[in-house]
Image (cartoon, rainbow, N blue to C red; front, side):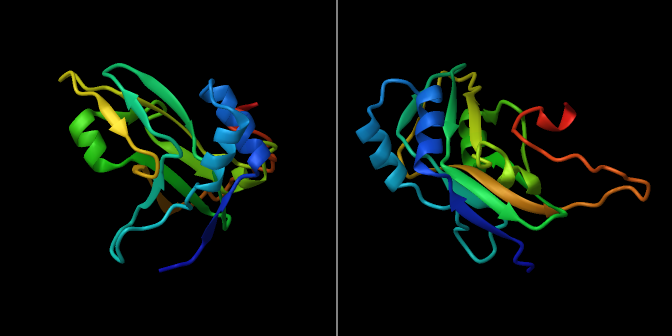
Length: 170
């Protein structure tokens, strides 16, 4: 196995700003406590491909509801690699939990963005069986899998990223 990446927490200021923008109604003290308890993604077993991302808060999602979760996590990885994010498979199977962008693609240069490369997840409970999804703080809800990628022989990309969604097409 190649060791090509390292997870970090974003700064507390970045987490607070993104959290307040995504989930209003929490005090600075409550957000500080949530930040202090953030756990870096980890694999559950030696044979696991996915790194489990845990939720920084407890929430319920009724069918059709969406929430944007600031994970408090960023990832530093070698060029030529990407981190792909998916719902944990059991949650997808039981609740049709979906990422709104279907697969989260975290590029190696995202780490250096103005937003510190803060990984956010907008998820939807797409259950058609009237099942309410409850995620407890500290429970896994996403999994990230690192993949190596190639480029074309005539590739001449030389742009520099500064931002998240849509920043590479500007």
